[in-house]
Structures are given as C-alpha cells and as structure tokens.
Length: 488
Image 1: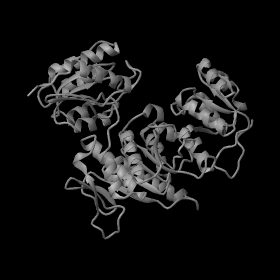
Image 2 (image 1 turned 45 degrees about the horizontal axis):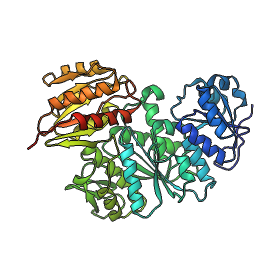
Image 3 (image 1 turned 90 degrees about the vertical axis):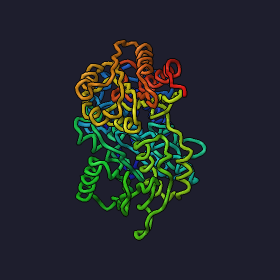
Image 4 (image 1 turned 60 degrees about the horizontal axis):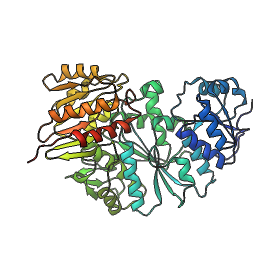
C-alpha cells in the first residue's frame, strides 16, 4: 500500500494519482487545483459518465465508487466532496487503512500555506447553523472597505481553490464553511474564526449534536475566536474546545484572543448594541467606554438575525484592525443575498419576503422574529425536526399559514395543536410550480393590511424542488404574478 509521503510541508505528497471523490462542483474545483499543483487525478463517482468527462478534461482516469473500493490499496490520498458522509464505505475504509481523506477546502488551505500560489493569505472563517452567507458577505465587504483585496469564498462567491489563482490576487479569504467542509479539514487554521450560532442540524450526517458542534469548532484553531455570547451552545463549545486545547496543545499552538458579540449592551471585551447603535468594547483599550460603529436599526436584512450577523462580522473585522468608518460604510451599502430575507414584492401594505434559505426551525425562528405579523408559508422535508416550540414561540406573529410539501401534515397538526385559531390552508399538489402558485394565491387571500407574506419553510426543499434557490425563485415569480396589496 502506498500512502502520502511525510515532509515538512503542509501539502500532502501523494504517490500516484490523487483520488477525487465526487464529480460535482466541489470535485471539479478539487480536480482543477490538483492539476495546478502538478498532480495526476483519478475521478471517482457513482455516475461513471460524469467521472469520465471530468477526468478527460484533466488528462486523468475515472472509476466508479464500487471499483475504487475494490482497489483501495492503490490510493494514497483522497480529496472528497464535502457532502460525502464519513460512514461512506469507501471513505470509512480508507481512513481505517491510514489513507488520508481531506476536502477541497483543506487542500486549498495546505497549498496556500505552502506558498504554492504566492505569499500565504489571511483566512477568516465563518460558520454556524444559520446566517453564514449574510455574515460572510458583510465581513468581506468590511474588509474590502478597509482597502484589503478581500473575497467571499467557499459556499458563497468563488470556490476556495479558484480564489487562490484569481487575478487580481485575493489577499484575504473570507470563507463561509459548512460543518461538512470543516469535518474534512483536519489542519485548517484560520487567522480568525466565528461560530454564529448552534442548533440541531445535519445530525444524520454527523451522528450526534456533539460531533456536529465539534466539527464547527474547527474554526477556533487560530489566534482569534469570535463567540456569540447570547448562544449557550456556542459558549459551551468554546469552553469545551479551550479546555481540550489546553490539555493537548503543543509549542506551535497559537495564543487565542476571544472576541465576543451580543445583542445586548456590551461588557468589556464584547461588541454589542447601546441605544440602537453598534458599539465595540472588544478591540479598544481596557478603560475605554467603547467605539461607536453604526446604526443597528438600519441594518439589512432587518430584524434580530440581521443585527446578529452584523455584530459577528464587526467583531471579526475589528479584530483585524478595520476602522469603524469602513465598517459603517460596508453596512450602509450592504444588500441581502437572494433567498435570505429578500423583499421580492411590495404592494400597498403587504410585503412578500423570500427566506427559502430557512431550511430548519432555528433559521425560521430568526425569520419570524423579524416580522410583526405574517402569513407563514412553510413545509418541505423536516428531517425529523420538531416545530411545536417554534410555533409556540412565534404564535403572536403568525396571523395565518399555508403549508405544503412532504411534511405538510406534521406542520398542520402542530399548528392545529399549538395555534388552533389561525386560518390555515393545506396545499396538496406535488408539482413544484403548481404547489408554489397555489400557496402564493392562498397567502394573498389570507394577507391583511400590514402583513408580511413570509416564505420561511423550516424544512429542506428536495422533496419537490432542485434546491432552496428554485423554491425561492418560484415564490418570487408567483408573488409578482399573484400577490396583492391593500392600496391606501
């Protein structure tokens, strides 16, 4: 069996072709990067045609997953797409045999740290159960306003490998990273990392909440740790991680600086809100009363979730020396990404908001908390998530509801039990276009002056849609076609 040669470099040294597990978007990026590193590639995918096409573009070979498993003794390094579960037989058995398995983010990190694409870059990592894309985009804007050549990368913007070779050069990588990507990044050590929040998600993939949180905490390996002081799970994970680090740290372990953020009035060492203003008391002299940053009431997207994202981004930006006026400029010009609380239609006194990215109850709670009264459109694949608490907490905000998708009956029963008096419409169609059109037409009839029609499904989209983007796009199209307002 031939494994990776050991050396003083960060970058693995495979013996023979590097195996790329997955011929999708991540696999293509990994193959591109591997080729630029001078490695030959072997593409592995259950779809042999897709694997062969990608292999041909890189002058490599291809195998099915089954064939690769039978020839595992030939592998020396596997770069996997992040969605491949750790218990996938190929990956599980490879690791059991001592064959390194990493992701494309880890590969890019190692190549950058080895100086294969010039001077190593600054890496700022953003993760959490919800809000990652907005916070990442905000932080990238803040860094750019400070004059840095910053780029949002990872699950937003460009792939990390692509950013390494981009012209003009990217010097600050602001990376949105999922728990999957972090699981396959065993040595990634960002210059600063933040966990926005933690709630149960992807437990079927990770195996447990503890394992999920531990993978998220990999952003805390570096010298700056961003902590949501309002999230008990994040605080517990920080304590666990710091304790673990103190007992296992070596001489190369960086000294860690903790920068907290809170929706409340900040104590020393925190970024928070005072009289509607974002104030920094973390990156200032100990005896300082704080530095005024920006108006928290004008943050986009509006509501607590948007403010929390702005606070997290501000905390990390300030830890990197960004001046308050640069942060204020970035926040004042920030426009929310599609499907993340975007107003897609307004008529009279009714707004239509697309928050299709709210694919779990935790994200939907944040979306509901940002409105006063709404017609809630919900449904899809709950994946075992419980929503009674979500509905109970937000009952006074939900004036009516429309449910659709695979688990619509579960949501209907929960609404009937927890909030029985509200008008409720059930959409039974399983055609994606028809179902969304009917949902929007029903919501239009239910909406009253001052309401928001809110698509915040609390569920995944793959029961009917190709993804949350298609679900949100169809909602926006239907809202513009069938939505109505109250003209006044």
